[in-house]
Image 1 (cartoon, rainbow, N blue to C red):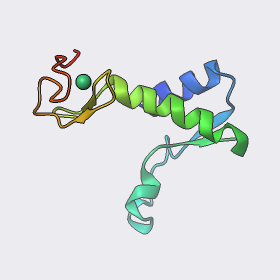
Image 2: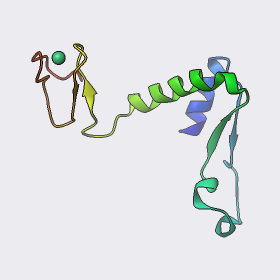
Image 3: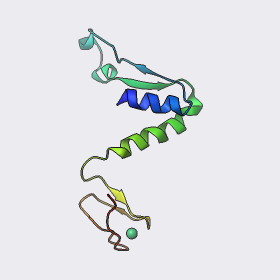
Image 4: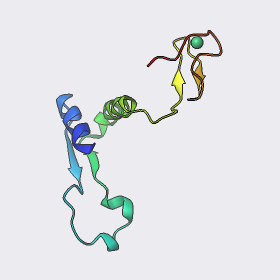
Length: 92
Ligand SMILES: [Zn+2]
């Protein structure tokens, strides 16, 4: 996942590095989340753009029963298969 994000960011001209990818040993001495791979943006001004790209990646793999938004702007919970407002069926 992080490698995929990193390559997308680099394609978009955003400089970034992946941390902790090859971390080995010493896990017991670190808070767990610091042992997970992370993508670091080199320049703060790229952050906004980078987050949009990351969100696109996440949206490509929505969790089951994820909320969805109709073209009319209404937001529905995952169990609804059609918009309660305008009746449009949930897009695939
Ligand atoms: Zn609708």
